[in-house]
Image (cartoon, rainbow, N blue to C red):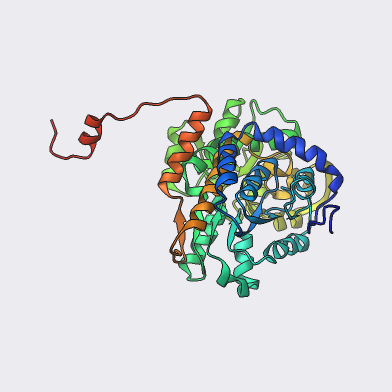
Length: 424
């Protein structure tokens, strides 16, 4: 559709824009680092004329990143990185109030989702922003004629980084990608504190359960799993962790959690939360062992962590019992409950991460885009870390916004750390 502002877009309803603006402005209060970057970008115009296609969750926090990129001079087009993560009022505001072409509708079907990605690619991007690598994969599979103009990209999340590393290893990746997810100011805070809080929030909104006393099975103990386990324990839940990595499993034990194979945890858990980035972390034989009333939710990027096809095949009947809660009735009378269609529950049933933590994640995105745009020599195709100076600058800006001061090394201390002669 074309909105009243004549900006090419596909959104649910432009009349939602007023509410979207209010919510975007509310989020901005908690995003001082992005605000500082936006102010500098407005003056310096480091992205003037750069064509950027971004496949991200269309939320209030993403809107503030988009405004910083726009004010930096970028020609920006947005599409959704998950069919259930779009906030329709935000999409409306981006188009009608801020003039940013946006292709995203909450609940869009698979065909629409990929049509929107293609529409975002129509402007022939020079830089891509991705969350899950669907845009990059589509570009490489179906729009290869556009690849010659792309100088670089960024990737937001663990799942996307895994896919891009696989592409690089196979020699399929044709341009450099900065792995924003690997920045310390991203995964130590966004993945741990953001995913932890927002996942619990999404499950609570969907089910209205009491967490205290529940057996909560956290499948995967990366930074996201650490955050979910920490927050669930804080609400009084008893935590079981399932892992395939010995080091992470050992860490979970040392953190005070019970660690079990999924086959054993399946019969015990009341609530199952997957955060692995892999396929079928909960499979049919696990579901067959679950007790009546078990709740399953996914907080990994794609809806493949639960074997949804097997769940549907097992069911004699299914019905929607609450928004974002579907009941599957099995032949033996047991009922299993799936939340948010197995998609990212924190964005399907809630609002995603708090703005304060996304402030740092999106600061990494903005400064990494600037870094790519200003490079004098193009990087070879590969997955790169966020430059250390960007990571450190974001930490300094965040601390300053919080009114927190830290010490500095003395000259004597600097000299000591750079020498080897002094010992006991």
